[in-house]
Length: 178
Image (cartoon, rainbow, N blue to C red; front, side, top):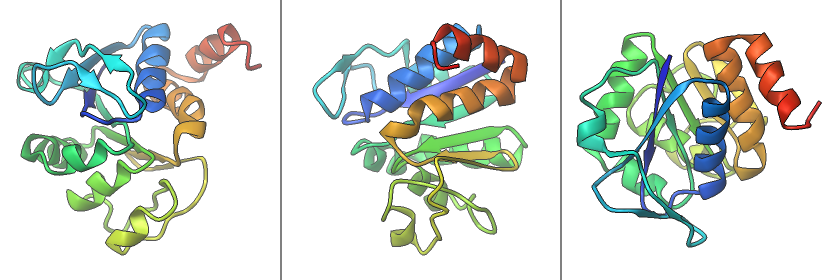
């Protein structure tokens, strides 16, 4: 299994780092990629060093793409490479996941039609979609989550989807959640 986590300037660091950390704890190959070759300054000033730039990362195939939210969502939604990636992965039956404000990118890419999704309150509604308001929601190959406070539940759900319930439980036990 291989996952891509695109990192935009002003992304929500809790969401980005939690997803990357937990997926790697599960032994899932996880590539973080900046939209350019620069370090990413997250929403609270934390500096993140992506593994690669997006163009280089897109030379590989992925089983899942995970979009962190925060103010960086606007950069993701304005990047033609991200919109194309999201569309092609969804169309190919691969997993597309987004948290907080990032489900708006899925809406912009046109993959939320006739789907249920959850997001930070007020974001999906601006695009004319209903927000389910739950912590984590899976609708087929689309997985969405509400915000920074649900990042761990979101990441654990992604582990379960990619590696099974046993691996989720193993990672969760190591986090002292259970």
